[in-house]
Length: 390
Image 1 (cartoon, helix red, strand yellow):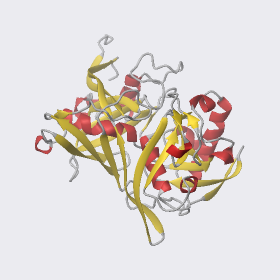
Image 2 (image 1 turned 120 degrees about the vertical axis):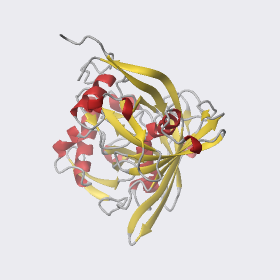
Image 3 (image 1 turned 90 degrees about the horizontal axis):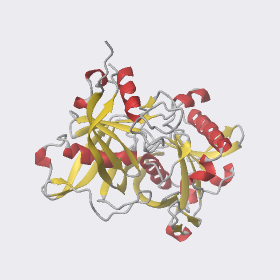
Image 4 (image 1 turned 135 degrees about the vertical axis):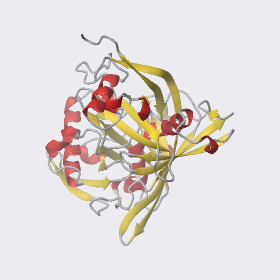
């Protein structure tokens, strides 16, 4: 007899930064999906509504963009000095694929809030009022992140006046510290602040490869025929640009040691990222707000899952701040060069300020911490339903 009853799984739909996704406690998942593998991937694909050849996610919780096709699995951490284990799955829109290769920096802002509200943080660590410091183990990249979550009357405070470009309404500020985002590994995977990269259709380009936050390939906007002030339609409405930038991403991934062959990039959409930089320039953000060159240190545009991002990925912001702190990288030079520990950059939705602490040891650069402010809010909580899969 065919099972006609849907699975009902406890879940929370949350916005974190400029992204939103479906959050689960590991213990609430069906038994077959509590460990990595085909069952877990199949469940998350069905929750989001992928693969969807129509590109709409009509029959799922996804929003048919890289920023809204995300899933998070959280569990109480048994790692010393940590409260919660955070696993992020980026769900492809048009393919039956969940990419586990990297973190989502934006949704990180919601991890602490979810952990507190769902019993994953010991009660004695939660103040009645003030800030709760949530110690997060990011399981995808095996790194520590600290979230500073505001608490009011013993509960997570979500309402506030903090405004984040790319998010329509204000909310409470959540400060995030990405601790040693590359660990003991060097920030520059090739050892060079600038490399030469040969790419079909572009020729020979300069590129800076950064491994902090998320592996990112930075190029100069002018070198690839762009301005650095583009909004989404300028790229996403043109198939030829999407194809050319994907070729650039694939060749950069090989050059920084992430792939052996460019063909492998197709099966790893989430990493690396490709971004282009330019010196400060005036533009009108997607909200209609004017951004003046005097408001920013540089302009940056970045691709996510094959499309120009509507704002800036949190993990890419970590890479940008890190690169800006290292004299001689293309990001640093676009920002005016020299030493800096804070950078404010322009993106399609406005601006973002990020701080980074980096140092050079025996000729190699390392980053101790990258900090930024985001916000988070529960959009809906209850149970997500999917047809029987197991």
